[in-house]
Amino acid sequence: MTTATVKSELLALEQERRRALVEEDYSRVAELFADDLVYVHTTGLVQDKADYLEYAKSAVEYLDIERGELLIRFYGDHLAVMTGTQCNTLHKRGGDQSIRGEGFATQVWSLGAEGWQISSFHGTRAPN
Image 1 (cartoon, rainbow, N blue to C red):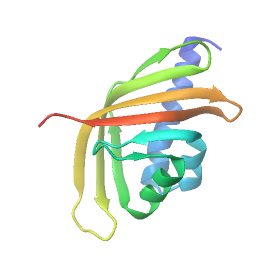
Image 2 (image 1 turned 180 degrees about the horizontal axis):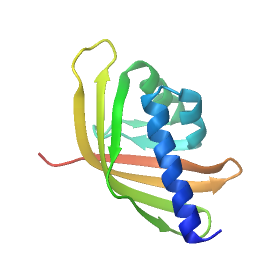
Image 3 (image 1 turned 135 degrees about the horizontal axis):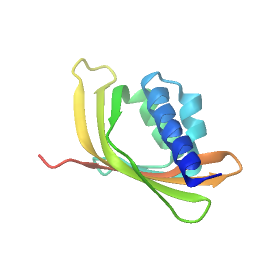
């Protein structure tokens, strides 16, 4: 596959991650994250895959996830780093007020037996 083809595939998978979180398709979210996931929230909370999935199901509801232009860099044939701005609109489950969080996200995508998956996700808040 060409680099352009793989970039298109990764961008489509990132779009799928966003859709799955907003639509609460947690089986698809689970497929997109590697079993050894390290997820770092903008608050500094660090979770593994099971903890992140439980958090997404029980603590917050994603209303929208917007991404700006994404830069993808490759390191060999099985590792890609995707970086770019991100804005999450969500609300805490049981709450009625939405929260908008703008920041920057770094995702490490690895290619394995399950295809491309996110093995690391790190969000940073935008300065006020």
